[in-house]
Length: 381
Image (tube, rainbow, N blue to C red; front, side):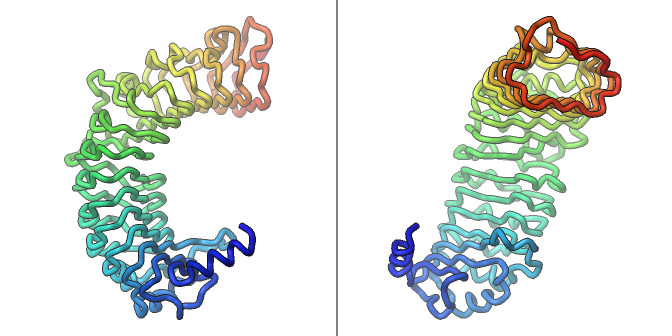
């Protein structure tokens, strides 16, 4: 933005918008609708907000400058969090990396709240009262590594459109029942599957119209790999899908078959898969738009999918795919990989032979990485 335009915008919005990097605390008043505060100034700003009480505030954003490398440990005080419950006109509340150890139950008073970002904090649970926010559409809980449990009545938040739990699965063991009631939900990057009482069944995903990125992770004790033949991901416009099984010695191919994604999928990752075969949708290349595929810690199968049939595939990564002893024409399929740019083979310790009967199998290959494949004897065209 040109300096003159910037100065004009700041002049017009002087009483409405406040930034801790540019403005003095004296200008905070009842007409202040939007506050943006540097996280490093939380201790000083706590008392300011308590004293000023901008009751008509619409937006509170905490931000961490790119050049600030350390996380500010003291974070937001519980007093400041309680004050937010009095700001009944708040629409957006961003408390990213605020050092929060407890979210007050009074958060239910923010009845107009649409956007709530609680990522990168330290709380273990959320109060059940958070499910009483009738207008909340965006809830970001990503990178909360201490989070153990989600509110049991999460399914009541029927206006919710985005529930972000990315990298919050370190201690989180399951999803609460009733997620099928979130009919407006469009983004759910993480879903944890478990069989314990009160855990949400994976079948509840069937009618949700999700899109974007999704990681489905099966808990370490989960064994009931069955959806009864229901293709629960077919109606979802996903770009990326990561399926993380649990390496238990049971047949999980039925579940993988029921997790057949929509043809729009661009990126597929499968971890800890131990069944002797892959489902038809992967073996018959029924996902023609795949650009990136990764198989890791897959122990059971012996026949590798014909990835050469994927005309748009640019990156293929195979790591610890134990059963494969040979890669030949079935791997290259109908002549090879027309778009592949990067091929990575890591710890393929039983792989002995890699051969083909076609010329120019990798016309666009830019990077070939082979690590710890000690038995590989032949690589020829």
